Amino acid sequence: MKVCFETFGCRLNKAEALQQEADFVARGWEIADGHSDANLFIVRGCSVTARAQRDCERLIDHLKRHYPNTPIRVEGCMEKKAVRSTLPTNPDRQAANASDAIPTRTARAYLKVQDGCAGKCTFCIVPQFRGPSVSVPFQDILDRTRRFIDAGYREIVVTGCNLTLYASEGKRLPDLVAALANAAADASARVRIGSLEPGDCALETVRAMSESTAVCRFVHVATQSGSNRILQAMNRKYDVEDVNQLVETAVAAMPLAGVGCDLMTGFPGESELEFRATRGMLKRLPFSNVHVFPYSERPGTIAAGLPCSIAKAVRSSRAHRLAGIAKELRLKFAKRFIGRTVDIVVESDDKCVGWTGEYLRCSSVSPVKRKSLAKIFVTKIHRDASLEGRLVPS
Image (cartoon, rainbow, N blue to C red; front, side, top):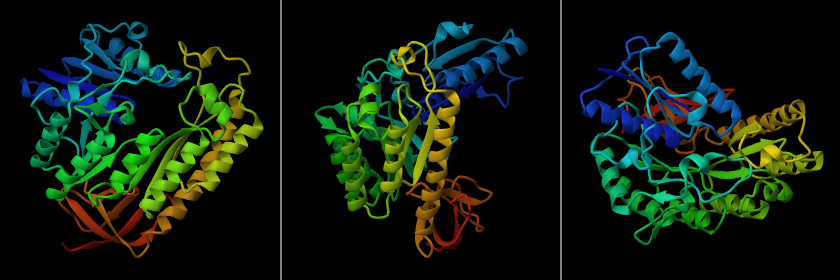
């Protein structure tokens, strides 16, 4: 029997899908090479925007038309009624850490530590699928990390729906980061932390990150807007000053750290002046990896019913303007690494390519074993801000 996985969306979805693949293989299934030889489709969907859900629905409709006799199971953040899955859905909120099987297909390990969200952001429908916050037991995470390392992984990517909500056995995210860093350092591995929501927990987490070289020097800050009024309309639990403080604390503690963020343009009621505030924040803070996207109405959310909708052409134009600034910032950041040595986790046996701890793409002509940590002396920057250099012998 063969199963085919189709996964959309975030790292959390990816972590869950990879674990599920490993579970199926452990039970004797094979992973299908393509759609035509599959006995079961598992689509792990994303509904963070209406567009994301439409993409999932299109794939499911395609599968149903071309393979009408093959069952489809729909999982993840997905409006199940809209896709009429052939099999009942099978949500398992701790599935990514629930079994003994270890995924082996990827170069980096994805470690799910938390699921769900207590927030009620007006544009977000994810809590309706994920529910309230649930944390994986602290000791289970450490055991899982050691098993990933024993399986040959040299980068552990920590994932969750809202990492700053992690709480287990009296431990919070800063405690978890410190413990994971110790485990990684002992094995010459590294840990990469996912997105952080500004606030006290994020500040403590950044300080914990700075205390170990086994933690990647990259901080992704949940941002969305540079206008406090828009953040309030989104029902975000932080303001622009909190964003400023988190970014400034991260860069002060880790001077060469990469800093990422998400920015949304055209939220209902966003004025040109409020857009300029977001643009000003982008120019002011040292962001190096910016995901810009125009607001998209998501049926079932409060924001979808708000007045003062912004024309889609204006949303897209604003997003385009921010993306241009983001591209310049990324290239400027990449140039700082000329003449420096960076570490990457090699993703291919055919060529030496991977991501630096600061989240820059880097390559070298010398082949290195997949999954291994390699040191590259940077000699060149490409126009897409990727790095190139020569391999430093270990």
